[in-house]
Each structure stands twice: as C-alpha cells, then as structure tokens.
Length: 284
Image (cartoon, rainbow, N blue to C red; front, side, top):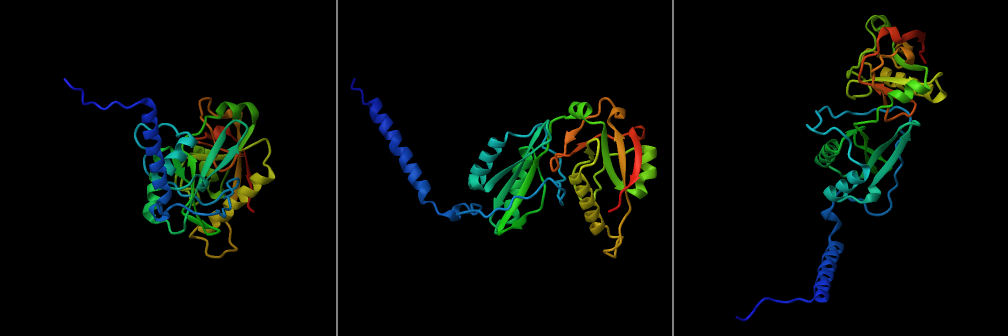
C-alpha cells in the first residue's frame, strides 16, 4: 500500500516554526494602539506618591475570594496586568518599604486619564484576586492616572517587635480615652481617614521620631477636615497619645508592618488596658 503521509525533515520543521513566529510578531507590530486603550505611549511623567506619611485611602469592602490566603509574587502580578489589560511594564512602578524585618512592595499602576470606571473596577478586581488591596481612588498626577495597591497579607513581625522595641504609641481623640482605659484599644473599621479592615495602628520605637510626629499631626489635620461636627477650620479636636508597653502585650498577639509607614505596625487583635502605661495630651 502506498504511504500518503507527508514526511518533513527536522530542518524544514524548524524553518516553518520560525516563519510562523515571525508572521505572528509582525502582526503584533501592526496592531494599532487603540487595541490597548490603557497603554500609555511615549515617556511617562510620573511623580511617585509618597507613602511614608499618611494619605487618604479607600478599602475595597468585599470579602477575599475563598481559598486566597497569600499575596501573589510581584513578577506574576505584573505579567497578569500586562497580558490582561495590554499595559506596558513601564506603567507599573514598584515602591519598597522596609522596616528592618520585612520589605513591603507597593505597586503603582499608571493609566491614561481616559481610563473608564469599568477599566478601573476590572483592575481592582484582578488585584484583589492576586492578594492586593486598593490604597487610593484614581488620581491624576502630572497628567497620568495612578492606582496604588498594597499587599493584603504581610509578614508577622511580632517577634521582631518584642525583641527590638519597648514601647508602641497609639493616637486617639481624647474623648475616647476613658473608654479605652476600661476596655482597651479595639480594632474598628469606622475610621474617617483609612477605610481599611478592622485594625489597630501603632507607632513603634522607644521615642517618637520627628517623622512619626509629623504623621500624627497629618492624621489630626485630616480628621479635623473630615469631621462634620467641626464647622470652623480653626477649631480642633483634642488628641491623646497612649504609650503601650510591648512587654505587657498578650504573648500570642500578632503584629504586622504598616504598608504605608515603616515606622508603624498594625494588629487585628485588641490591646488590653493593662498594656497601656501612660496617657499624654498631644494636640497640634
């Protein structure tokens, strides 16, 4: 019987593959930019947001996808964004914050100002699936739209804090001090500035640094501006700083690096009154 099968030599097969790849890459080069409306062409004039201090952030108040218990590697997330949304690698900026124990990578995604609400919603959805939380509303900075994301899951730095620090500091409106001294500092989400999950934030260190004091002042200013009870810009709420003894914290408490400040930590657990060793007025 005659064999009608086609026999191709190895060299010929390699040549066919090369031609196929060349044809595909040529097609990619001919695609119009309009096929990728989120791509920014040319040089990007991007001013990196400063996350050492405190700004206004939004928190996507949706439950994490079931089974998602970690943050994807940064390289993988970048590749997903590039493939899914057609943006260039130059549109993704990494910002590292290191507290001596952990390096947290914040991702700033640069988009054209013409990006739609649907585009932004889809990007936030993908980032949430990858284990990242949105830090800001869509901001236009120097003609470039910016979305910033922090990891949802951070390294437990409890042991490091207990080994290197004696005190933590928590700022609160003075009117809440009596209640705190009775019940302790409890995590809550009803925050006028940070719409994060229920957390307790504290500054760390044996003495508040200049940067920490500036951050505390910025928080007071932002809260005063957002407080509907304050009608006169010159009026201020009174604030207090609680000094917390690290030694008196519960042994099993978990602490994590604050993703927007390498001089602060947060915990999802309450801090008991017995750990609070002093209260000082601190109104700027």
